[in-house]
Amino acid sequence: MADALHAVMESNRTVYSRTVVNRLQNEEGVIKASEHWQDDKALPLPAQMLRMGAEIAAVKTDGIQLLAAVEVAHSQAERTQDRCRDRWP
Image (cartoon, rainbow, N blue to C red; front, side, top):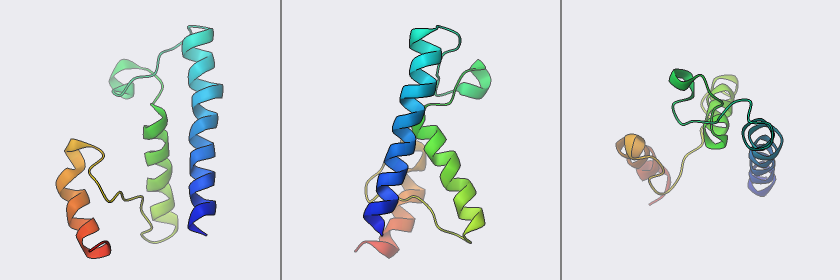
């Protein structure tokens, strides 16, 4: 089941990268993608879209979250370490 979920998440991120970001930013030059997408009035990065989807899924599934065994974003380091400590010894 975990492999299937990973495949779906990876596929969604790839589709967003190729069909939305690549086309609008690189091919047509309509809008750029930015880490600070709200301030820059830009597209969210693929990883940010994945995170936003995970936040919606957490609400709908009563707490399922995307967690990494290693720090992904420095700003989330302490939170990630605390949550992972209970799950991965």
